[in-house]
Amino acid sequence: MEQAPGIRERVRLAARKKLLFLPHAVRQMIRPDRMITTAEVRSAVEAGDLIEDYPEDARGHSCLLLGRGENGRPIHVVCSPKEDFLAIITAYVPEASEWSVDFRARVKR
Image 1 (cartoon, helix red, strand yellow):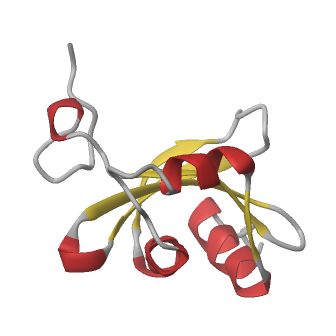
Image 2 (tube, one colour; image 1 turned 180 degrees about the vertical axis):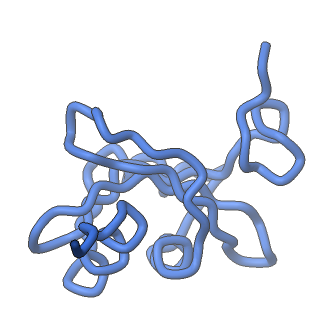
């Protein structure tokens, strides 16, 4: 029996069609302390690692990816694959105080 593609593969397939940046993502990306480019987001989507999966998200199955941007800075991207595009829900530079050293796990408080 053939297994349905997992969220990571669905993200890559949707990204090959089109990236759709939702308004929240754009607002986060253009903050002066972040200035995340669309190229950095695309790189995170194409080559980044899945670090959290949200199958029950109200916006549809989504996930959090960790990629690297300019000068190797960590970039987190939350996205949701759709039939004709990949919705970029948000993108941000993770705060070191809120994440593990490798930015893959949230710090427990």
